Length: 531
Image (tube, rainbow, N blue to C red; front, side, top):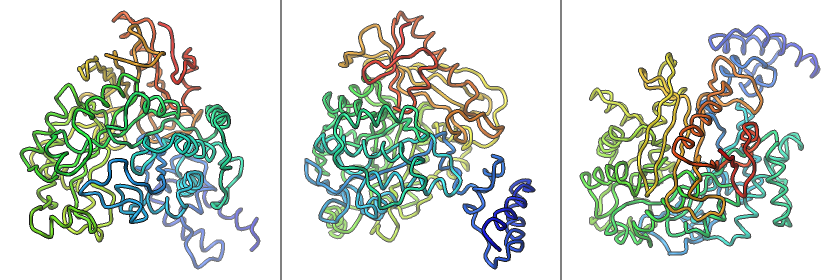
């Protein structure tokens, strides 16, 4: 059977698909029709499927794009952190891995496979996601691996430029060969071109997250982050107690974390905290008190949170303490109880992104070895008759059930000297979140685009299965139904009511066209509008 005949037969059978319950039966039928003793993979069938309902049934790991974006994580090359090495840190150049990573995490392994070339990493990940049925038109880029803002700015700019280049050229090159590399001679003018092209590219960078340390998040660092298209910064807070930070030789103080948090917010950026319960000099009670202060204290209140129970890995100073019997980490059961207690008190405007490092259990000497610790904690809450109200547990797609009556909700709180508004569309009865805006009235902004008359939109997000730019909404998706437009209008109205004359959005490069539809204009690194 020639290729054309084979494709014709597959297409004809695919047209009769009715839903998920038919998939396995039809895959067997396809194999029989084309005379193959091998069942085709879902990814091999997907290219023949046009109906979104069937694509959804064939799509592998649907949670990859269930939150409304396609996440592409890239790893920077191994280099030491400027302060040295924390006692629990398993990685670094001596281990041929980025600082704070073992090298066996999936993202770290992809980075090493691509020799830490950012262009190849992005391209390879986009190819993988597309092959298993995911839309890739809206990419949230996450730059991982040590203290990015401590690297020379030329490295930072080149790294991000190549990431954008991979997105811009992905469809132009068809399926690019994974050994291709973006030109290393790119200068700042080329970076500006890459940003401009990405505003209307088929694969758009709708947000970029940088990981760094609180003490490398000063105003100059933030200016660089914004220039590079950053929309979110995750800082390694680890603990809010100086005695713990000193014990683990972290090299920064809680005051550094507070200062970074304020400066990031007043620049319009989203803020994520990495926090490690179970560090030396802490215990269950002090850890729970720490999270209560993080959620309630006006110096903290992160938008996003990653909880990493402390693990013992070979080759670390903590491993020597563990061998000597002077340190013992949380095991799965105790950590799950603590996380359940934390999830019980989390505010509805915080998103717990991750619980537990992505380290294979055979590389963990002691500590939490079960990767489903979040689910174990959820089960504990369920047995108690309690629940977590973080964004991830409430967002449509992750939450159980379908929304019924959707209402506008406005929550106001204070943080780092400014006023914060969490404006959302929710099914309040069933506690399901459709989308939201984070708006801030700043305290001490340093950017020239922002003055005392300026309100900041730090995040706009609509959840549900991701749709590519310009695609009409399917029944199964909540995107492209004008929730974003309505949230934006509500934020503008609140800003006007409070006497503000201008509003700026910390927009991803590829999201700028969206804001232009509502009369926003490029204003330095932001999209802004006069009110």
